[in-house]
Image (cartoon, rainbow over all chains, first blue to last red; front, side):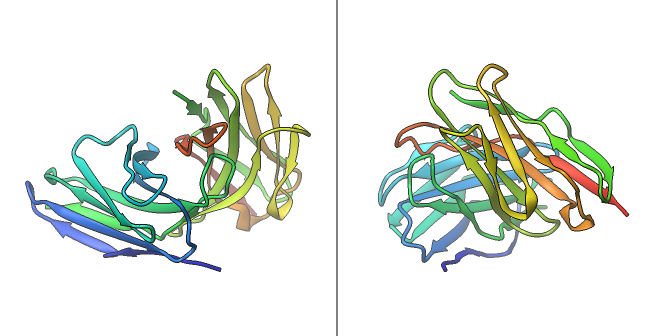
Length: 113
Length: 114
C-alpha cells in the first residue's frame, strides 16, 4: 500500500503572508488534487494535476498557486493569507481519470492570526 | 460543469435502524459517481463507486448505493447501522472518460445513537 504525506500538519500564518503546503505520495499515481475543507461547505477543489508539470484550476483557485515539479509531489501556495482564515487543506491522489479510487492525506490545518 | 447536492446536512438514527443518505447531481454527459466517508479527525476513505452496469453497487461494511438516471441521484443506504457508522459522508462526481476533475458535495453528518 501507499501513503500520502502532507506537511506541515499545522500551519499558523500572519495576514498577508505567503504560505506553502507540501504533499508527497508514493502510490506512483498520475493525478493529484488539492481541496479546501471548511465546516459546512464540504470539500472545494482548488487545483488538480493529471501528470508532472500539469496544472488544472478547480472551482476555488483564486488566491492560490500550485506546482507539480515531480510526479510524486504537489505543492500548494496561499499567495496572501486572509486574517482569521481557518481551514483544512487536503491533498489526494489517484491513478487517473474519473473512475479510479482517490486516496487522501490527513490534511494541513491552517490558522491565520 | 458538474455539480453535486447533498440535501441533508445532518441525519440522526438509532443503532439497528436503516438509513438513506441522499445525493443528487447535474451533468450533461456520462459521469462517475462515488461515496466517501470521513470519521471525526481522520482523512476521507473510499466507500463505493458507479459508472455503468447494475445500478445498485455494493461497498464496504454493508453500504450500497443506487444510481437513478431519471432522478439524477445516487443515494447511499445501509439496512442496519452500527454506532461506528457515525461519520460524515461525501458524495462525489466526475466526468466520464479521462477528465479527472472530482467534485464533492457538502457532506451529510450521520449520527448513530445507541
